Image 1 (tube, rainbow, N blue to C red):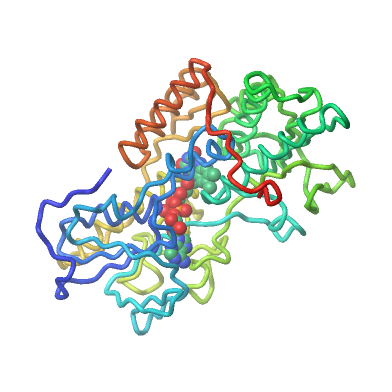
Image 2: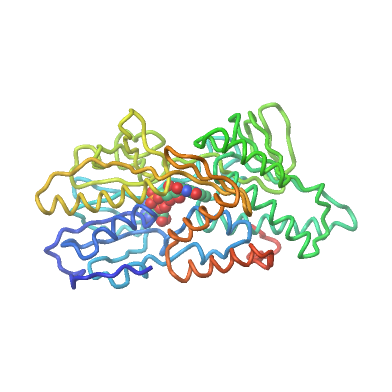
Length: 432
Ligand SMILES: Cc1cc2nc3c(=O)[nH]c(=O)nc-3n(C[C@H](O)[C@H](O)[C@H](O)COP(=O)(O)OP(=O)(O)OC[C@H]3O[C@@H](n4cnc5c(N)ncnc54)[C@H](O)[C@@H]3O)c2cc1C
């Protein structure tokens, strides 16, 4: 979906204030979109030259979608917007006094307004071995690595099936939406490779184990949605274990606090997110909760009226003493809000506080099974919830071609014609 401009502003019009947006995720894109055709110059910087639709990464990891179907070049999004430029690079540092951002190659970019939209990253909580051996789902590279690992394990099990058959344990750590979605999709993948690809594997020796310290799945959802997700996952053959904490991850094993050590083919890390270690945790002397940038109700950073933070990288006060959750709708709405405030400032008007409009949360468990909880309304489950989930994700996916391809893929799977990109994109020796 390329953004178009109605005015003919020139990106080189140096007299206009320069807005530098670091991060082209859900939040950063919305800031830039809101400034298209406005009397500012915009530079959006990202370490990837594409926007990643994180909510569908698990489908790339489980060979339902291709990586290119959930990513879109940021340059193309703003191809026709005359006042928006893209800069490919990693921002390492912000020099607030000199009003410059410093990139990895040491080049500096001066700004009049700065927007931090760098998102978050996987939280490993200092658990030994977790960051080395467990696979998180936070980037396309993670998703591709997980897909390689899953498919390689299955191929290995097939290769030794006649001589020394082995069992396979896949452990998913974290019972939030990502853990639930990945577990359900992995169960469908395994059934498909056995049924359709002739893989020699005893299904009773393949375990998908979802573990969480909490006593229920999907804790942000109402209890009946958690109970439904549990019932559906168990129906799909996923073993769900509550109250279990991981104390160590080894290359081929996982250890729990109760002393159990389990051999594993893969550990998927879906245990939480943090902004610690990202640029966001470095822009203030004392970072906010989870390394996030502390912002005012109007999303400004500390006393700086020209610096802003949005989305997962910002600790956005919710008015009740807490903070809004790190979710795509918060990122998009906060991005739009900052764009509007930058425009207001240019018109000499004061910044307004951010108000989040909660339209509900949803998670899918498998084909025909999803939960969607409206803010004050009912929880929709089953096929209706699943259709709502499909529609919403298609709507927000960036790029018409991607929407079309994903829709075709999903329709294909709906009618149970599962060919799918089950490709190991690595050498056999380095299957990661
Ligand atoms: C696997 C997964 C599933 C999810 N599912 C859902 C869901 O179903 N529903 C939902 O509402 N939310 C979901 N979320 C959360 C949602 O994706 C995030 O809330 C949202 O992406 C936040 O948007 P953002 O713009 O703040 O950050 P991001 O989308 O993470 O974008 C940050 C961008 O900044 C770039 N960047 C970071 N650091 C730098 C740097 N130093 N220099 C240059 N560029 C940098 C990154 O490359 C990235 O493009 C999911 C998240 C994950 C990981």
